[in-house]
Length: 268
Image (cartoon, rainbow, N blue to C red; front, side, top):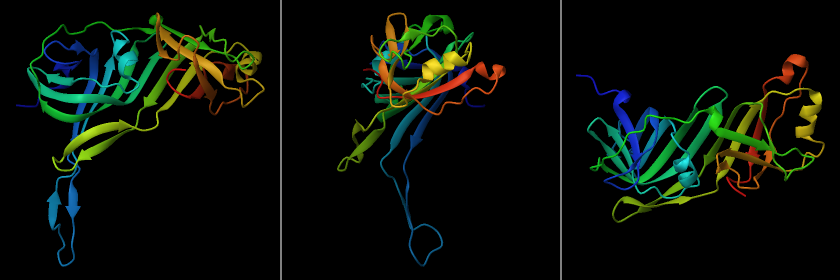
């Protein structure tokens, strides 16, 4: 009998027995890396020994969120009490877990999509959980994007012509070992990296110049929000800077221009 497919997989977060459903999972991928150590030696073509290293527990998930509560609560690296990978009646529980990498994106006329990589200290057989499975998702009409022009870098202006946006946060966790127990003692964050991309239609060359501005050193505010919830930026915004910008070459190039950016953090 073939292994059960991903159509019967759900992801839940929070302590048992009543965690919260993450969203509509589109692609789950639990990973256990035993970090094998290969011991080589002279006088033998093969290995002398194979030793288990510090086990690396990870879960890669793509999903469509029904709300942004998980994103706003855990994208900065806060501890997730448990992450439950459930395939039918069986599965795994990763605990505690943390967001190593999270990408959030949306295209005009489409649903919001998330892609995440989570790291955990340990993994056990799925704990007994119950709850209501999510069947709804957020779409493009739920989000607002604001970008401040360089002429007024602290005054974000609503961008109503975006075609696509996405941002990614990397919390860069380092796994520290409990040498005596041969387990993970803790997972510690290193420097956080935040980058993204906004694609939007431009009316004319003057509009491109307005957002690019004449001061290459000038940082500006960006906001991405859903209702009153800020995904990127705070009530004021978050300082950002454009990456490589391509200048329009003709009327047809004024449409769907790519504006990559780097932010100093998730929030100001």
